[in-house]
Image 1: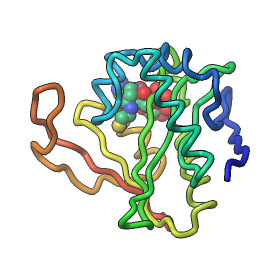
Image 2: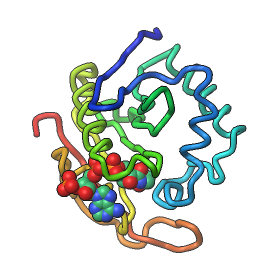
Image 3: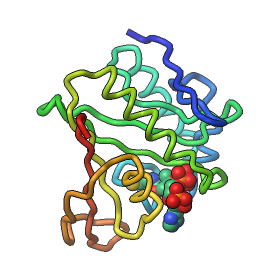
Image 4: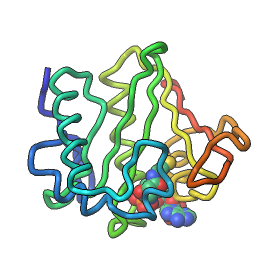
Length: 179
Ligand SMILES: CC(C)(COP(=O)(O)OP(=O)(O)OC[C@H]1O[C@@H](n2cnc3c(N)ncnc32)[C@H](O)[C@@H]1OP(=O)(O)O)[C@@H](O)C(=O)NCCC(=O)NCCS
Protein backbone atom coordinates (compact mmCIF):
# COMPACT_ATOMS: atom_id res chain seq x y z
CA UNK A 1 0.00 0.00 0.00
CA UNK A 2 2.92 2.31 0.75
CA UNK A 3 3.21 5.00 -1.88
CA UNK A 4 5.58 7.93 -1.84
CA UNK A 5 3.74 11.11 -1.00
CA UNK A 6 5.52 14.44 -0.72
CA UNK A 7 3.66 17.68 -0.16
CA UNK A 8 5.79 20.76 -0.72
CA UNK A 9 5.69 23.78 1.55
CA UNK A 10 7.73 26.94 1.81
CA UNK A 11 11.01 25.78 3.42
CA UNK A 12 9.69 22.35 4.41
CA UNK A 13 8.10 19.24 2.99
CA UNK A 14 5.51 16.85 4.37
CA UNK A 15 6.70 13.28 3.83
CA UNK A 16 6.27 9.82 5.29
CA UNK A 17 8.35 8.57 8.20
CA UNK A 18 11.48 6.66 7.31
CA UNK A 19 14.11 4.68 9.16
CA UNK A 20 16.69 7.12 10.55
CA UNK A 21 14.06 9.63 11.75
CA UNK A 22 14.30 8.47 15.36
CA UNK A 23 17.07 10.79 16.52
CA UNK A 24 15.72 14.08 15.20
CA UNK A 25 12.21 13.08 16.28
CA UNK A 26 13.30 12.61 19.88
CA UNK A 27 15.48 15.73 19.75
CA UNK A 28 12.72 18.05 18.54
CA UNK A 29 9.80 16.43 20.37
CA UNK A 30 11.47 16.15 23.76
CA UNK A 31 10.22 19.45 25.11
CA UNK A 32 7.81 20.14 27.98
CA UNK A 33 6.51 23.21 26.15
CA UNK A 34 5.24 20.84 23.47
CA UNK A 35 4.04 18.08 25.80
CA UNK A 36 1.97 20.50 27.90
CA UNK A 37 -0.17 21.18 24.82
CA UNK A 38 -0.65 17.59 23.70
CA UNK A 39 -3.30 15.00 24.59
CA UNK A 40 -2.68 11.61 26.15
CA UNK A 41 -0.22 9.44 24.26
CA UNK A 42 2.45 12.05 23.56
CA UNK A 43 5.51 10.84 25.51
CA UNK A 44 7.27 13.16 27.92
CA UNK A 45 10.20 12.82 28.13
CA UNK A 46 10.34 11.92 24.44
CA UNK A 47 13.29 9.55 24.64
CA UNK A 48 15.08 7.86 21.76
CA UNK A 49 13.33 4.63 22.79
CA UNK A 50 9.92 6.30 22.47
CA UNK A 51 10.93 7.71 19.09
CA UNK A 52 11.99 4.26 17.89
CA UNK A 53 8.65 2.82 18.97
CA UNK A 54 6.70 5.57 17.23
CA UNK A 55 8.67 5.40 13.97
CA UNK A 56 8.15 1.60 13.98
CA UNK A 57 4.39 2.03 14.41
CA UNK A 58 4.23 4.61 11.60
CA UNK A 59 6.27 2.50 9.18
CA UNK A 60 3.91 -0.45 9.73
CA UNK A 61 0.84 1.73 9.46
CA UNK A 62 1.98 3.29 6.20
CA UNK A 63 2.51 -0.17 4.68
CA UNK A 64 -1.12 -1.02 5.33
CA UNK A 65 -2.62 2.44 4.80
CA UNK A 66 -4.51 4.68 4.72
CA UNK A 67 -1.78 7.31 4.89
CA UNK A 68 -2.91 10.02 7.27
CA UNK A 69 0.33 11.02 9.04
CA UNK A 70 3.32 13.05 7.87
CA UNK A 71 6.65 14.30 9.09
CA UNK A 72 7.32 18.03 8.67
CA UNK A 73 10.81 17.71 7.23
CA UNK A 74 13.19 20.67 7.44
CA UNK A 75 16.71 19.98 6.18
CA UNK A 76 16.16 16.24 6.59
CA UNK A 77 15.05 16.50 10.22
CA UNK A 78 11.73 15.64 11.80
CA UNK A 79 10.91 19.23 12.71
CA UNK A 80 7.35 18.27 13.63
CA UNK A 81 4.39 16.24 12.51
CA UNK A 82 0.85 16.56 11.21
CA UNK A 83 -1.44 13.58 11.39
CA UNK A 84 -4.85 12.20 11.98
CA UNK A 85 -6.94 9.14 12.64
CA UNK A 86 -10.04 8.25 10.72
CA UNK A 87 -12.80 7.44 13.18
CA UNK A 88 -13.46 3.68 12.80
CA UNK A 89 -17.10 3.99 13.73
CA UNK A 90 -17.60 7.18 11.73
CA UNK A 91 -15.42 6.91 8.60
CA UNK A 92 -16.52 10.37 7.46
CA UNK A 93 -14.56 12.00 10.30
CA UNK A 94 -10.87 12.51 10.94
CA UNK A 95 -9.29 13.69 14.19
CA UNK A 96 -6.33 15.93 13.44
CA UNK A 97 -3.27 16.88 15.53
CA UNK A 98 0.19 18.38 15.18
CA UNK A 99 3.29 19.68 16.89
CA UNK A 100 6.39 21.57 15.81
CA UNK A 101 9.85 21.79 17.39
CA UNK A 102 10.30 25.00 19.36
CA UNK A 103 13.07 26.43 17.23
CA UNK A 104 10.69 26.55 14.26
CA UNK A 105 7.79 28.33 15.97
CA UNK A 106 6.36 31.63 14.77
CA UNK A 107 7.37 31.33 11.11
CA UNK A 108 4.02 30.35 9.66
CA UNK A 109 5.08 26.73 9.20
CA UNK A 110 2.14 25.07 10.95
CA UNK A 111 -0.40 27.32 9.27
CA UNK A 112 0.93 26.21 5.89
CA UNK A 113 1.45 22.55 6.89
CA UNK A 114 -2.16 22.43 8.06
CA UNK A 115 -3.37 23.81 4.75
CA UNK A 116 -1.37 21.23 2.78
CA UNK A 117 -2.64 18.48 5.07
CA UNK A 118 -6.33 19.28 4.90
CA UNK A 119 -6.17 19.80 1.12
CA UNK A 120 -4.57 16.33 0.84
CA UNK A 121 -7.19 14.71 3.08
CA UNK A 122 -10.19 16.21 1.32
CA UNK A 123 -8.70 15.39 -2.09
CA UNK A 124 -7.60 11.81 -1.42
CA UNK A 125 -10.32 10.68 0.99
CA UNK A 126 -13.60 11.39 -0.70
CA UNK A 127 -15.61 9.93 2.18
CA UNK A 128 -14.16 12.29 4.75
CA UNK A 129 -16.46 15.17 5.31
CA UNK A 130 -15.24 16.55 8.60
CA UNK A 131 -11.84 17.19 10.18
CA UNK A 132 -11.82 17.98 13.87
CA UNK A 133 -9.19 19.10 16.32
CA UNK A 134 -9.20 19.91 20.02
CA UNK A 135 -7.05 22.46 21.81
CA UNK A 136 -6.31 23.38 25.43
CA UNK A 137 -7.56 26.82 26.55
CA UNK A 138 -4.17 28.52 26.78
CA UNK A 139 -2.93 27.43 23.35
CA UNK A 140 -3.57 30.63 21.36
CA UNK A 141 -1.08 29.70 18.62
CA UNK A 142 -2.87 26.45 17.87
CA UNK A 143 -6.33 28.05 17.91
CA UNK A 144 -5.05 30.56 15.38
CA UNK A 145 -3.59 27.87 13.11
CA UNK A 146 -7.05 26.26 12.95
CA UNK A 147 -9.05 29.47 12.57
CA UNK A 148 -6.73 30.67 9.79
CA UNK A 149 -7.43 27.40 7.98
CA UNK A 150 -11.19 27.75 8.11
CA UNK A 151 -11.90 25.63 11.19
CA UNK A 152 -14.77 26.82 13.36
CA UNK A 153 -14.93 26.77 17.12
CA UNK A 154 -17.90 24.50 17.79
CA UNK A 155 -17.83 24.51 21.54
CA UNK A 156 -15.95 24.22 24.77
CA UNK A 157 -16.37 21.13 26.89
CA UNK A 158 -15.98 22.58 30.36
CA UNK A 159 -13.81 20.80 32.93
CA UNK A 160 -13.66 17.72 30.74
CA UNK A 161 -9.99 16.70 30.61
CA UNK A 162 -7.38 15.74 33.17
CA UNK A 163 -4.07 17.32 32.22
CA UNK A 164 -1.04 17.19 34.48
CA UNK A 165 -3.25 16.71 37.53
CA UNK A 166 -5.68 19.54 36.70
CA UNK A 167 -9.18 19.27 35.27
CA UNK A 168 -9.36 21.68 32.34
CA UNK A 169 -11.70 22.89 29.58
CA UNK A 170 -11.17 21.73 25.99
CA UNK A 171 -11.87 23.83 22.87
CA UNK A 172 -13.32 21.86 19.95
CA UNK A 173 -12.76 22.99 16.37
CA UNK A 174 -13.91 21.43 13.09
CA UNK A 175 -13.84 22.08 9.37
CA UNK A 176 -16.32 20.58 6.92
CA UNK A 177 -15.46 19.63 3.35
CA UNK A 178 -17.63 22.33 1.81
CA UNK A 179 -16.34 25.17 4.00
C1 LIG B 1 0.93 25.67 18.16
C2 LIG B 1 2.01 25.48 17.12
C3 LIG B 1 1.69 24.25 16.30
C4 LIG B 1 2.03 26.70 16.20
O1 LIG B 1 2.95 26.48 15.14
P1 LIG B 1 3.66 27.69 14.39
O2 LIG B 1 4.29 27.18 13.15
O3 LIG B 1 4.51 28.41 15.36
O4 LIG B 1 2.39 28.57 14.03
P2 LIG B 1 2.34 29.75 12.94
O5 LIG B 1 3.68 30.39 12.86
O6 LIG B 1 1.76 29.20 11.69
O7 LIG B 1 1.38 30.77 13.64
C5 LIG B 1 -0.01 30.80 13.50
C6 LIG B 1 -0.55 32.08 14.09
O8 LIG B 1 -0.57 31.96 15.51
C7 LIG B 1 0.18 33.00 16.09
N1 LIG B 1 0.88 32.41 17.23
C8 LIG B 1 1.83 31.47 17.21
N2 LIG B 1 2.19 31.16 18.48
C9 LIG B 1 1.44 31.95 19.29
C10 LIG B 1 1.34 32.11 20.70
N3 LIG B 1 2.10 31.39 21.52
N4 LIG B 1 0.46 33.00 21.17
C11 LIG B 1 -0.33 33.72 20.36
N5 LIG B 1 -0.27 33.61 19.01
C12 LIG B 1 0.60 32.74 18.49
C13 LIG B 1 1.13 33.48 15.00
O9 LIG B 1 1.49 34.82 15.21
C14 LIG B 1 0.26 33.31 13.78
O10 LIG B 1 -0.65 34.36 13.65
P3 LIG B 1 -0.58 35.38 12.40
O11 LIG B 1 -0.64 34.52 11.18
O12 LIG B 1 -1.75 36.27 12.58
O13 LIG B 1 0.74 36.05 12.53
C15 LIG B 1 3.41 25.31 17.77
O14 LIG B 1 3.63 26.40 18.62
C16 LIG B 1 3.53 24.02 18.58
O15 LIG B 1 3.85 22.99 18.04
N6 LIG B 1 3.26 24.10 19.89
C17 LIG B 1 3.40 22.96 20.79
C18 LIG B 1 2.52 21.77 20.42
C19 LIG B 1 1.09 22.14 20.16
O16 LIG B 1 0.57 23.09 20.73
N7 LIG B 1 0.42 21.36 19.31
C20 LIG B 1 -0.99 21.57 19.01
C21 LIG B 1 -1.84 20.92 20.03
S1 LIG B 1 -3.57 21.31 19.78
